[in-house]
Image (cartoon, rainbow, N blue to C red; front, side):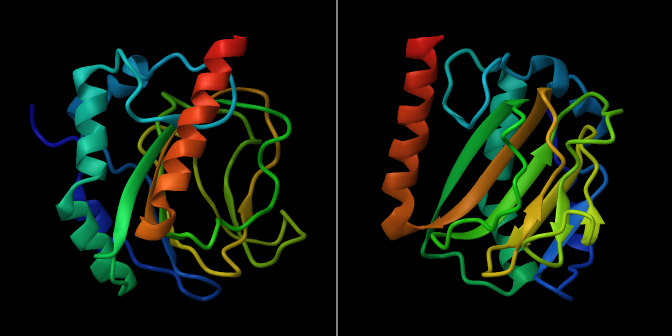
Length: 204
């Protein structure tokens, strides 16, 4: 199986640092990876799930390994001019959006970079589109709106003003998120996501 991610599309995407550093790619997945959307695990509840879920297809596992690879780390480190040597990679999956999701926020200070890849076969809803924002109070004052269609990617540096959010939508919304987390905080992130997944299974 060849590479699933077109690394060159990521290398060539310009970083917008007008408000905070980020870049987006309309589709970073090569053609033979299109079946990934159909192979994505059926996550019927909201929230994040750890990437070591049982039963993942070989193609999903390969996609995760490419996202977490040293080659990806090198590219992103260069693009954002940030040292990622003292970080750990944590990848999570999301399959369902709730009406309480999408509130304007910045990511926690324990994260250095956030990598968000959408894996919906198509997206025709005007809501649920992530917006990179100029402030913490107005969803309409955005720098860029990110498509939620298959292969759409956005990566941003976690700063005090990396505001983002979306108009709430209820329903299936597939994405994969990878974070470079400071090593001293990685254990608590893993415990939180693992415990959250356990609770969802327990009460489903």
